[in-house]
Amino acid sequence: MNIFAHRGASGTFPENTLVAFREAARLPIYGVELDVQRTKDGVLVINHDEKIDRTSTGKGYIRDMTFEEVRSYDFGSWKGEQFAGEKIPTLDEVLDLFKATHHMINIEFKTDVFEYPGLEDDVIATVKSHDMMERVLFSSFDHEMVERVLAKAPFNEVGALFMKILVNLDDYSKWIGTNALHVSLVAAKRRAVKMAIEAGNKVRVYTINTLKDYELMEELGVEAVFTDYPEKLYRHAYRKRYGN
Ligand code: G3P
Ligand code: CA
Image (tube, rainbow, N blue to C red; front, side):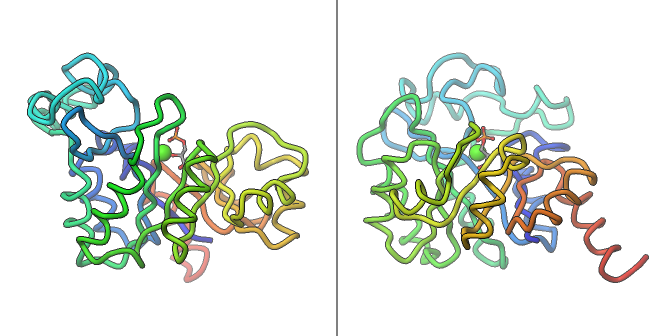
C-alpha cells in the first residue's frame, strides 16, 4: 500500500509549505499531496483553504490578492514559532523541490467553492514546463474539473474525491471516466468502497493518521493512503516487512 504525505508532512510541519514538502521529499514514501490555488494576478500557489485566515498572519481570499501581497504573510508561525517566516509556496517552487526525487505528486484542484476558469490549463502548462507530467496525479472534489482534466491530460490519472458515503461508486466512476477514487476514511469503511475495489478501481483514502486505520486500509485492499504523519506510517510499514 502506497503512502502519500498529505499537504506535505503536515502533522509536524505547517501544511502546504516548503518545510513540510522538504520533510516529505526526505522520506522514502510514494508521493506527496498538495492543494493548488490561484492569485488575482494569476500565480499558482499552494494552500488548502481559499482564504488564508487559518494558516497565516493575513486575512482574505487568495483569489482577491496579488502574489506580492499573499507572499508577504507568515504561513509558519500558526504551527509553532520555530516555523515563523515560512511563506506560501508557488507550484513552481514545489515542482523544483521534487524534481530530483522519485515522489509522485498529487495536485488537488480546489475548485469546489469558486470555479477559477482555465485553472487546469495553467496547472498543466506549469507541470509541462518542468517536464514532470509523468510524475503527477491530479484530483478534485469538483467532478466537472475531473472530466476537464481527463480530457486535457489523457495520460495522467485523475482522482475523483469523495467525502460522502455513496451507493454505487463503480458505476459513477465509469460515468465520469476515471477509476481513481479518493475517498474519506468514513466512506472507505462502507460497502460501496469494497465493491469498487472488487470491480478493479484504485481506491486511495484520506486521512489515515493512526496505525489501526492503516492496518484496516491494508485489509480492505486500498491502493494508497494520505497521511499527515508519513514517517510514522512508513516506519510501521517497514517494520512489518523487514522486522526491527
Ligand atoms: O486529497 C486528499 C485530501 O487532501 C482531500 O481533502 O480537505 O484535505 O483537501 P482535503
Ligand atoms: Ca487536499
